[in-house]
Image (tube, rainbow over all chains, first blue to last red; front, side, top):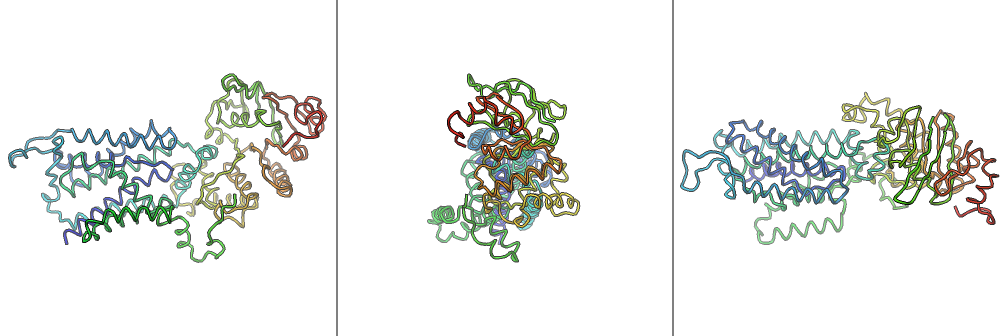
Length: 311
Length: 252
């Protein structure tokens, strides 16, 4: 049972990661650097509970702010760039952060422990071990999964409210055409930075939750592979509405686990699924049109038919 | 209302706009015509903050607006439409106009749900704008599904939602058939009656001649004539430069 609770917690963490991508995705900015903010959040969060004596929730929140600060640092200079330049900058930053985390050493000696394993805190390439907060405080995996999902629900509600407000309309306008956005009085750079920083905050929280679940993290956990998967959740689930990232992250965390019996092929199957979705459903699994259809089932048929590209 | 003095823009050695003076009075329907490459769009881009002028002054209601960014200029009351129209693919007509209302709201208002009671006035305003622009029956259609003529109307609706005092339109009739152009002419007259000042750049000379009460003619970045339709039509410089000496009309 504990195994499935671990999967449940991991799923929630990945949902958060997916939303951290989605926040700036809404304004048309594609980040392949979320691993950096996730990693910063993981290290900050773990340091706070292990070395700083913080409780879990405070540590997660501070980790969120650390992720936000890191994304502000990348976002302010690069979000003035157009299109792919921003994406490349996020990749570069994530790589830099990974190398830094890989070489980080601070903390104090442990009172007990085997030879060669007597350090509390990140120990360079050996990583950050003994993040034992859950164990020390008697929090079971099931309870932890619940904590994670409470945070997920809060974030989902936040996105739900944003999606019904003018903020979403503004971000979508920026996504489509920045010139038009400026012409209707939208301070484009400010919105792009704000969206990206929100994403950084969510990624930071997500990273801290991850660190406490795994109890052992190292720079090698926060490679570009993680950033790519996070982006894939959004692109495959569907980047047009907030339901896409949710579905994408849940499906692509749970599915590979249930496919364990055919373990040799599950990664290949995963890859095949990505190709199939991109081929037959470029909007992702949940498109805006589909959401519109479900939320207004009484809409006349004429509006439901596939629009023709008339111009 | 809008005063332009000696406005110039040079791209390297190329002078796109060289020392243009314009004075658009309140309530005018002002037309700017000129052959391709005469600097019309460059002029517009400077007036709306998308291009930094090389020299000259732009004053709007006595305020110096030169050098302001586009988003500040819209807030001052100068809205524009574009020649090439683009919309968010998955937004409806109504949602497109919603976004353009955002400049009237503070952060709290922006986060509030669009359907919430506190935003009833804005919703009413959207309805009025959609009615004015013939889009009311199409309010919940996706913008990309609209026929071309209505897409142009949406462009106008979006500009109106910013509550402009003056509307600058970049070739609003381009690609329109004669009946759509006629409709547009009527619409612009009605907007003027509502108190809006309109400046338009146009290739469709007949439309401008029939509609505008004052017309400026640009050629090679300079203003070669200004006046009423009749004055401009009979100006020898205009006939030579724009309408051509032999041909009745330059290609539009």
